Image (tube, rainbow over all chains, first blue to last red; front, side):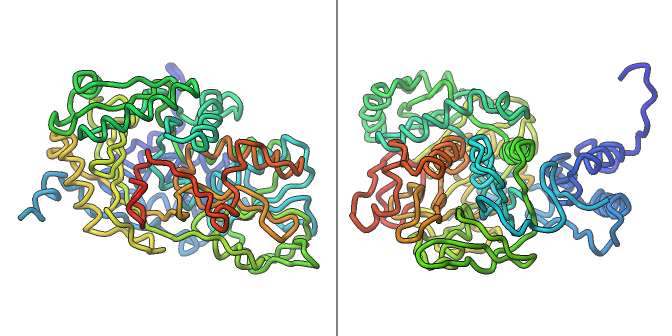
Length: 95
Length: 401
């Protein structure tokens, strides 16, 4: 890619380095469902669990797919809300 | 732009007629549709109630081995392992098959003696397995807690792959051969005339077809019920987790009966794994539980103490449909012409490539391939259950651990 101007550097998912261009390309290829877009790009699955990116991705997806925003649901939230050390989880229940 | 969900899926009207309808757009259904299309089966339709791969296909532990302890399991799963070796090339899509080895860990002298016994049958089948003493295991997994190590069996040409990529790979390859995959399409009825299937009714229309396959994963029992066929499975919830990425510390996939757990480190550095309760709890919910998170944390920290300082990033659940002997159901449905069963999977991710090819052979030729024969649903009435002992699965009878 060196020497070629990038079309966009807008990063939507900071955890996984997913750019607007990545999303546009994925949607054009056919990953135009938030569930599959998430799995392809990794967006919404990083340490922030989508807190910083899910709304921007929903909006872009709605725009690209020609759908209303409320027709693009957010993916289910997975626990934990914030990453937790396994040692903390392991210790809590010990006698 | 109309939504496609994944490349290879189609939108628009359902066809009025097909030569075969596969119910379930997970790995089993898509792989089977691909194999049927390779055989030139005509118009093949796959119906998926949600997005393709939304069930167990996208929730499993991604691990791949064929080093089991019975002729039946080794026969089917080693056929699959051979297909895994070249699957990315065959489907022209990288499924990230990582041949990093698969360690079945023995943590007690008794388990090690069992591993030694299993080695004989595995060698007889020509598997690339090696019996490891404690020092060998420590060299292979330097971060593993020494008190967990009594030995083990490593299968060198096994490992893990990426489950979503595998679903997409089969969907694309199937689509290139003309398979029509319809996501977000729910089956509501199966039409029968005399003793043969005739049609499938969905929330989007009716398809007449002489062949219907139940590859509906967690919903397999309900789908078979629509055709009046009993599928003897119980549905259990399993939970899994992934940590934040860390530097490479674990090369092979590892299964440990002592903690009833399985895990691997992905090429991106995340540690991924799941553990099972001693006795499974029938449950079709896919909500994650705090008990599940704690169980995984306790057991994986016990196995790899360094993980105490590593953060769990995500935690999810899925369901398995478990038969009395934990083996899948792969056969023609008894008493109903044109209806086939490809369900009851617990080791479905690793088994899919071979099961799909063999089921396609059964459907096309009418003859049951010998490798498939032991997996007929009639074993639950004849009592000829498969006595596989090397599974890392919580069993209701406590026998299959």
